[in-house]
Length: 448
Image 1 (cartoon, rainbow, N blue to C red):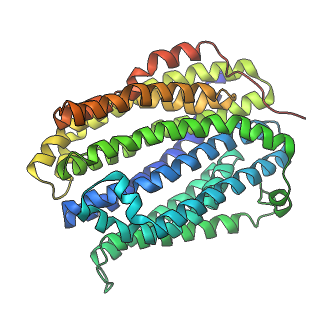
Image 2 (cartoon, helix red, strand yellow):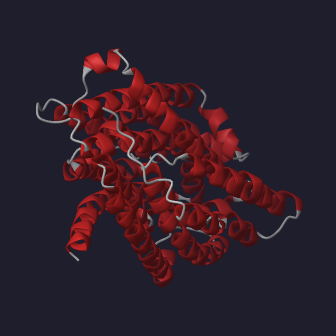
Image 3 (tube, rainbow, N blue to C red):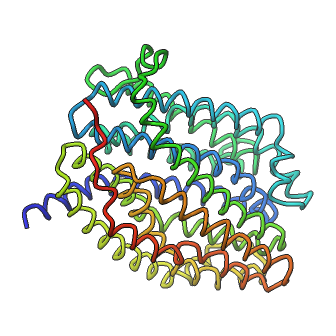
């Protein structure tokens, strides 16, 4: 009983701040779309497609932060601060290099990037200035996202949430002012949303750099950035490479959903945009549990308490199921409210959205379980290859071909295509359960 009280206390200390930060970030994404949706449906559709570039970038950051958590959580559980700082240096080198590549692509080739997602010339024209401006934020994220991850893994979860939340509030306020031209500012519409994002990310970076000046915390050290720790570098690549492959396989498959929906008309794009916003907001607690479970179990594995880690894993699965069911009910109950707040959509888009939200509700059950088990529990013990294999088969052998055939060859109705594209999380569940019961993830990865 005492162990379980301790478990829930540790879990919610981690999950609640992370979930809050996820929620605020999702609200900013929603504010971009909803505020622009108040202007016109074309602006809503354009920004929903343009932000797919940042979504792909976020896949790289997600892989690096998961890889960082795998090692940092275990070494922090072992009280090895020096190893955690070396892991931080490895992740920062890689993340900044990736952010530079995306910065160059968005700044110099925005039209080419938009054409990947749509053939609508009006949407492409609207998306180009957004990508050019927002590209600067990618450079800031290359540093701040990794450092915020390390803060969560080194006992500073609450402070990390404060910094992330401050950034989100600034972004939200600037969105309102710059999109609509309030308080004497020019009405910048889509460009205003991009400028707000850049300013907020710069503030986030400054907060992170100020935090790094403290002497008693895990810090960015120049000598670790300049010189690689051979064993840690090898371990980092060993555990992170499958995660990166997994994120890209899943994320590019998910992006293909937008590509497929993007060729089914502006009504489908707009409804899908709102449905995705709802998914992202409601999924905050699910994703928070996934992140928290990786840290919680990683700490126990690093301490060598494998039996406790296994017990925690079983409890986390139960929590994930409960949260998934509650998330489903919240979406279903909230459909009338969401429809009223959806902005200036056409009647056809409203019709699409209503059905899409029903599908999103049931999708959340699978999402909650898989994000906790695959991204959290499995990765905590270095069991990273399963997620890659599972998503490769699910996305590229089943869902993407099925969706493409349904949309472009069979010419099925929009809602049937959407239904097929949202089966991915549910069809993974039997394989995930079977692999979990093998307990291959119960491993101490630390070295002396």
